[in-house]
Amino acid sequence: MLAIGRALVTNPRVLLLDEPMEGLAPIVVQQLVAAIRGLVREGVMAVLLVEQHAALALSISRRVVVMERGQVVHSGDSSALATDRDLLERLLAAR
Image (tube, rainbow, N blue to C red):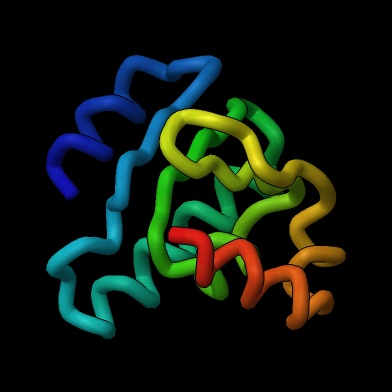
């Protein structure tokens, strides 16, 4: 959390978040998700989110890129992937 705050103070054009929800209490996760949604909605900076919790990541993002062993196996609209349960299960099963 402190690292995110420190990064935001510099007014970056791109914010890279690598599994920011890992190990956080559920209430803190909710607060962090709300903050990330706000950043995305404002459009002031690009937010690159690396997250293993697919439903959570898809609910925050506009676009999604799924990688497996360093290779892109899917890219597209987040809402489209979130509603395509078969494709989502196939992509997650490959991990």
